Length: 113
Image 1 (tube, one colour):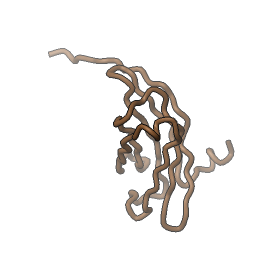
Image 2 (tube, one colour):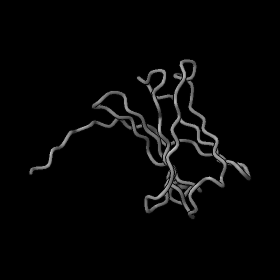
Image 3 (tube, helix red, strand yellow):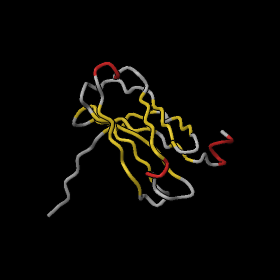
């Protein structure tokens, strides 16, 4: 039986901005054009080996054009020296928005620009 493939195009998004306090991590991402009320944006918090958690943010009408802000208790994050954080959303059956990866804590390469 041959493999069947479907092609989905990706529109790139910028990496989320990561800030922190002693107990919480705040992820701020720009609004994604083309999403509708009730759609979900998924944020991935994963180790360099790919293990981690996904957090789904369901959008409300008044927040569609606002930056998305997600506050996570650090104790809920995967235990790792570094986390890769990205986010994305489906726009239609054949198009996806997916962000660049943010690193937490920021890697030396990312810090150098």
